[in-house]
Each structure stands twice: as structure tokens, then as C-alpha cells.
Amino acid sequence: MFQLLIVDDHPAQVEGLAHTIKSFGAIGIEGIHKAYSGYEALQLLSTKTIDILITDIRMPEMSGLQLIETVRSSSSSVAQFIILSGYADFEYAKQAIEYRITRYLMKPVDAEELRQLLTGCIEELRQERSRKQQIHRFIYTLRENYPLLRGTLLQELISGQAVPMEQLVSKLERLELAFSPGDDVTMMLVRLDNEMADIGERSELSLMEYAITNLTDDIFGEQCHLWSCKDSHGYLIYIIKAKCTPSDGIKADEAASVLYRLERLAQQLKQSVSRYLKGDVSVLLIRKRAVFPNGLPSLYRMGISAIRRAGEGRGLFITAGDEEEPVSVCELQSLYEPPLLNHLMETGKWLLVEQRIGLIFQELAGKWRHSPETLNEAFHYFAGAFNYISHRNGRQLSDLIGQVNLTNPCLTLHGLEGWVQKVLDILRSDLSLHGEERGYAIRRAAQYIEQHLDQDVSLQAIADRVGLHPVYLSKLFKHETGIGLGDYVMKCRMEKAASLLRDNKLKVYHIAHMLGYQTSHYFIKVFKKYYGLTPQEYKAVHS
Image (cartoon, rainbow, N blue to C red):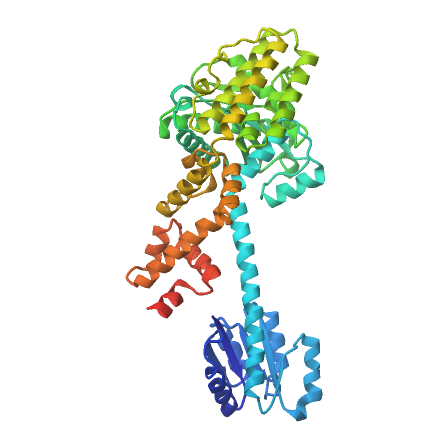
């Protein structure tokens, strides 16, 4: 529903137009406002949200064109303008072309012409409102997926995966990351130890990792920019850029003090996890700085090497990077390059699964054919991926593969390749027989959203609840229902909000809290974008 303002220095003309528009009935005009001069109109526009402005072209002190020019140069919400003109003013009215005014009414006003003009204005306004709502929903969904998208990009960079510079700059800007090519950065690795690492439920582990990252942001945030992800080993990886660096005016001999402060913050993080989360983490801080993004893989390899050398101790604090050259780490790279094998299987991309397995065996054959330790590492990687995807689908891998040995049968490269292919064939065949479980997962996701609107209904939280990878769940939900998860969450919240407002007993801030909004101001903003009315206006209409 839209608001209209009529401006004319002849009160009879204003009243006549208002009466005529009211006689049109439900064409989409909710409120009709009146002003008798340009200045009075501007005063009213400063307090009211007006969508359509009808103004006489000739008025004393301020003409209709001057009024339109002033309105357009302000932050007013007026989107549609209609000019009233007498026959004697026609030449004067042609100046309106310069102001992009395409709607005119000649006096005396014909009612049917007025109705058609308003109908056209309202249709354009509705289309524009719909477009803005779609953009808002897209941005909402994108922001909801920011953590996943940021983490995936960082995984690519630390693994050495090439990202074209122009594309990288665009992604950094779009994901609102405070990093740019050429920045001086360092890295920190956090390993969950003992009881924290042994949390059974994946959702509980994700919650713990989320809590650790929040603590890290709180502790480092005042002095540093952070960007985090989880690597294939289960470590939390943070790249760090000091907000104040030598290039910002600090003397070069003070660079060491920046690293010293980072050490103090890293130690504080370890202590805070122990104090507030009642668990132990090992924290490794790399004292060497590198240039973003090309220096990230060497920092990462240095960190992995150092944390491996430190062993399985509990609650360690480790520094690395004081050596002249980083320690070279030789590992089977194709195993750990994103996307990981289990994620490809989870999303049903079997052709890519076959291609990834082919790359792994190509690397094994080229470099590691005669290395029992590397073959053993590859076996456990494959076994872990196969266990993961079978458990995701509610099955024990041992129940599926039966006589195919789960202990390491792979003393040779050929033996490992045969074992992998056989298990993969069995697993893929079994998964293809359980398509009906998709509907069950979708129903569980929808039920969780509807019952937890006042809690965390992010994509990650929903995915954890139904036991699917977030990207896979998002695509599956869209495919099965025709609506994105973010749009469905918004729809449920707004429908619940409308229902609660119609009850007319609850305050707006109570409803905002019941729907998981931190502030009533943000809830009011979201509600108005969705329905075109503020909660108070909606309540007044439906009371």
C-alpha cells in the first residue's frame, strides 16, 4: 500500500482530487495527504513517507517544478511525480521534460485519466518494491553464507591453489575482508586437544570451534584484522594483519614489538579457552611475516611442520619462524586440496570424485610408489572419507562393504587402488538407493527452522541439525522446494511476526526477541522491507 501527496495552492482543487481518488476504491493508495504550497509540502515530506506526489505546476513562491527539483535532491522516498497543468501553462509544462517527468494531468482533471495514471504509478512502484525485496533476500542469503565462503577461499589460498588476482580482489571486496594483495600478514594455528577434540556430535564440535573463533576475534580484534578457516587436519587457521604496521608510520625497529604483542594475545587466547570454555587448545604463532596472498602456503607449511614436531602435548604454546628458512614439508598434496573427497561425495559429484581419485593415484605413482608410510597415509585418508559419507547417510561402512577388509590391505600401490575402487563402487550403489531420504532431510530442516526462529537458524546450524554439508543442503532444499533456505527462514519469521502482530497484545520489541532479532530497530527495518509497512502500521491495519 502506498502514500500519496496532493499539492496545490487552491484548496478546492486539492479537496476535489482527494475525493476523486478515494472514490476509486482499492487501487493501492492507503493514505492521501494534502499541502497548499511547496514549502508546506516539504515540511510534510520531512515527517511522512510519500510514494507519489501530485503537484500543480504554477504556485506562488515555489513552483511545482522547483518543488520536484528540491525533493529529488533530498533523501525523500518519493518515486513517482504527476504534474497538474492548465491549458495556458502548456508551454511552461514542457520544461518538465528536463526533470524526467512523463506524467501530466490537464485541468480540469478527468477522473478516468487520473485513475489510469495512478494505476500505472502503483504498478511501477510494486515492481520496484519487488525488485528491492529480491535484492535484500539475495544479500541476506549471501551474508548468511559469508563464513563458509570466506573459509573456502582461505583454504584455497593456504593450499597454494591459484586464484587470478582480479578475481581475488573482487572476492575480498564482496566478502568484506580487510585484506589486500601486498599486505604483510602472519598466521596462527589452533589445535583442539584431548576432550575438546573428542566431542562426539559434529554440531557440538562446530559450536566449540565457533566459540573459539569468537574469543579470538574479541582478543585480537582491537589490534588486528583476522580471517579464519578450518583445514583438512582439523586445525583452526587464522591469518593476521596488524591494524598498525611499519608502513603506517611505525619505525622499522618497532616491528618486533608487533610480533611480541601478537604473542601476548595468542597466550591470552589459550588461557581464555581454558577459563571460559573449560578445555585445552594448543596455539602456534608464526613469528615470520609474509606477503599476502603468495606467502600464505609457505606460512601454512611452516605451521604444520612446527605443530607436528611439537607432538601431541596438551595445551601447548608454540612459536615458529625464527629459522632462516622455513622447513620444507613433503606431503601428498592432492589429498588435501579443496574441495576434499568427502565433500565431493556428499554433494553427489561422482565424476569429480573419480577425477580426484585419479589425480591422487597419479601423484602416488609418480613420487610415492615405494613409500609404505605415504601409502598408509593415503589408505587412512580414503578410509576416513568413506566412513564419513556412509555415516552421513546413517549407515556403518562395515555393514556396506562386508568382506572388503577395513584394516589396511594395501601393501602396494596396485592393492590400494583396487581397494579404493571396490569400496567406492559399493558405496555409490548404496547411496543411489536412498533417494527417499532427501525428502526426510528437507522436512527435518523445515521443522527445525519453524521451531527455532528465536535461535540460530543459520545455514550451518540447520545443516548440523540434519547432518548434511551446508552447500549440499542449500542446493537440495532449493531443488526440492523451489525456495532457498535463506528465503524460507525469512518467510517463516515474517509470517510468524505478522501473526503475533495481529494478536495485538505483544510489544514490537517482544516480538523481535521472540524471532531471534537482537534489536527491535533491525526487526522493524526487515519487516518493512518485506511487507511495505512498519510493524506498528501493520498492527494498526489489522487490529
